Amino acid sequence: MAGEPQADCLFCKIVAGEIPATIVRESETTVAFRDINPQAPTHVLVIPKVHHPDAASLVAAEPQIAADMLREAGQVALDEKLAGSGYRIVFNTGAGAGQTVFHAHAHVLGGRGLNWPPG
Image (cartoon, rainbow, N blue to C red; front, top):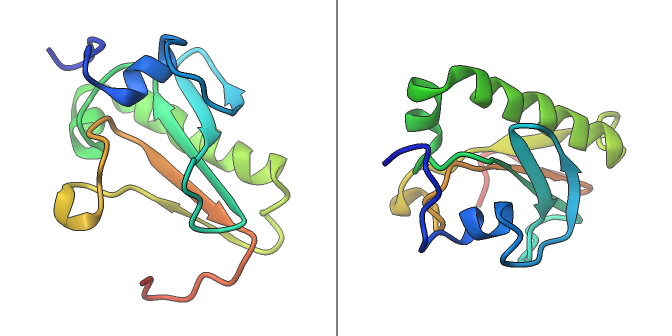
């Protein structure tokens, strides 16, 4: 069921403390941790503590938690001193867009030039 922890979900296991992660921020509704395969000098994931497969399903079911994620992503950028040089917040949705863990999450990327389009 959406919102409930999923036994086979890597990010649900991080939220539960079953899998270690380098946590940089935690709020009542979110956890932010360093990506284990960084694509920029700063690459932090911000996830909701509740399970939803992607950002669209999260915002449809729990818009306040989606807003919490964006607030926390902005705070990560401030904490990591990215606000002055710029940063990107990315939500990948679906395997074709590069989503590999089907638990909503935002990537906070910065610390290098981030030309558009990416890739």
